[in-house]
Image 1 (cartoon, one colour):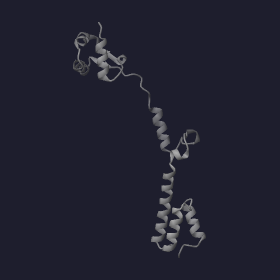
Image 2: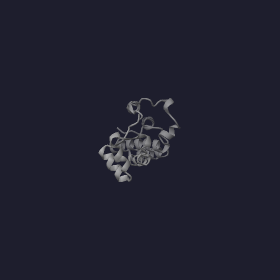
Image 3: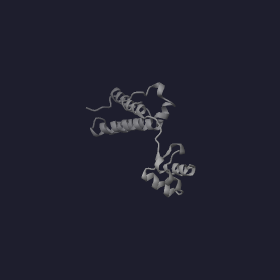
Image 4: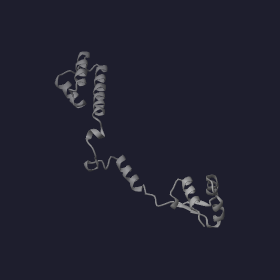
Length: 149
């Protein structure tokens, strides 16, 4: 019994390879009469035509790895591809740093720990990229005695 076209249509409907399509042996005469996609769909819903699941790839190891990465593991030099700027762009690093410095300066000004003139001077210096980090900014303030009592 030639059911090549039925198998092809069924594969198209099931979105798989014809190799994965299996017919019920008792209902072969019904399947032979099916010539349209609609006929095939009704046979699939009846259970006369089924799709055999293949041995899909297991995600177990991938899940374990993702879990470890969530904890910060497996991110060493050997796992990295591309430059540091590919992982965290220069601009994003700059934005994070400058926001931190500006927030710190604003807090000092609002708590009246530095005068407005010193605030403006330090703000412009940080805008120009003078300070490497918040720590560097704190060090500069303490060294130059800009903090008020």
